[in-house]
Image (cartoon, rainbow, N blue to C red; front, side, top):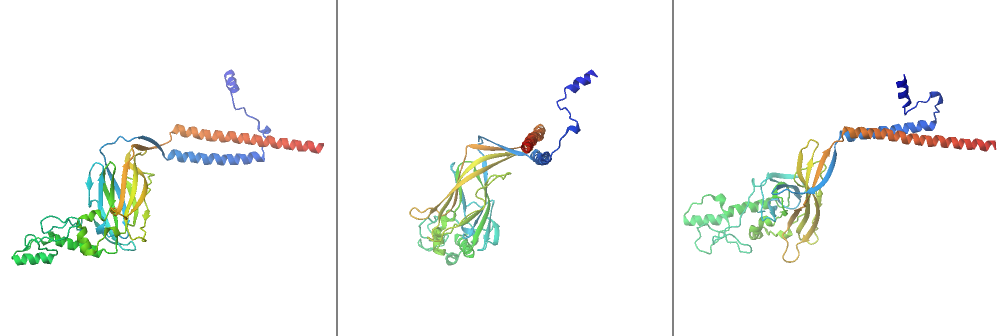
Length: 387
């Protein structure tokens, strides 16, 4: 019994007989509001415990020799698909012109409806610099004089059309084989395609694979057709500086998507002003930040975020800038690491105890202040009446 009495004397929570309780209206209201607050904060902690939080930190990017997929989906409402070429180059000297693999082009009308969709390189015609009668290829600003493929009667004879090549062969008494491969046939097909696509636009999407070094990629109607300028000018009055490079970037990302990523150029649209009638270079300067996202299961996604500024250079003065939409990118030496983490059970229980204890204590202090304040006011009022 003495042991039980000693334990009883250690009770830090002495009980008061219910006959001595004084329950008040203010105490009841404070109890209700404090209970609501406890419930709201309790469910908030439950949600934080069940769902992972993302922590971030900055480190130095130590990766080397990696490749990068640049994913894009861009719409040119006033530029035919046959005149949209994709080129890439970087500071290491790697260059790729008129890229066709992993790219899909969609011909669209003025309302944006799809006319035809094709993977670039399939059913498309790529023309090289036309073969001249002297045996070389057509140089820029050189008059076109097509080769007769050995059937010419003089050094000055030109065969600029398929019919002229056939006539020259007929005069020689030769049979013309493999007609599909001669320049004149290829050019005629290309010209016909341009005529068919007159007044159309183009949606182009896919990806390009580049080195993880500073560089640029661009959609440039001029770059992909430099080798055919004179020919196209003669046949179609082709003037690249007058092309409308209005565009809308439906999507642009550097690497894989990850939870919470924001690509600032998604949905961005630029319309060329028609006041001057001249096009130019629309330039995006992109700062790419390497990013690693680690989910709650430890799986890592190596990707990138980026910021961007833009500038338009109109085709005025000499030398005139090549028309097109250009993306110049460089990489930050700082890497961002995102890590999903769950709240530990011990931390969760500590927060729950802090919520209940804290609100209970504050409610008790508030109730005591209201109760004693009310009593003091009531006592003064009674003294005033007696006086």
